[in-house]
Image 1 (tube, rainbow, N blue to C red):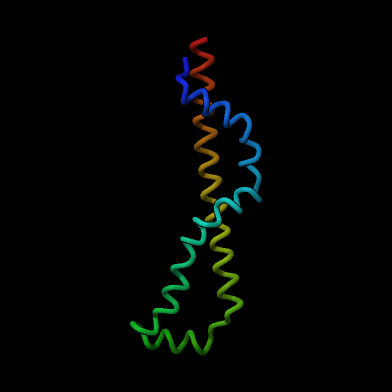
Image 2: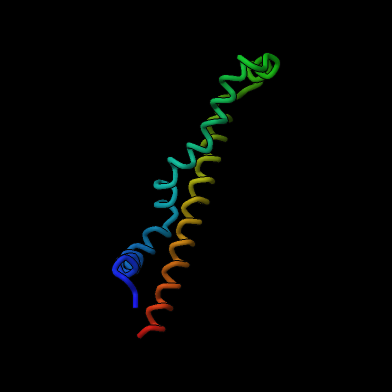
Length: 106
C-alpha cells in the first residue's frame, strides 16, 4: 500500500508527465540552471584581464561578441535540456516503481 505522499506523487505525475516531457517546457524551466552553468565562462573572460594579461590581449583582438553570446546560449540550452530530461527520467522511474508497488499490494 502506498502512503499519502506516494499517492500524491503518482496523481501529480499522471497529470503532468506529458507536459514535463515537452522540449519547450524543459528549455524554459531548465534555463536558470543552464545559465548558472554558462555564466562562469563570461565571468572568467571578463576577469581574465586581472590575472592573465596575454589572454586578455588575445580576447580583445580576436573575440567576436556574437560568437560568445551564441556559445553561451547554446551551452545554457544544452545544460537546461539535459538537466530537465534527467529529472524527468528520475520521476518516471519513481512513478513506475510506485505503480509496481501499488499493483503488488493490491
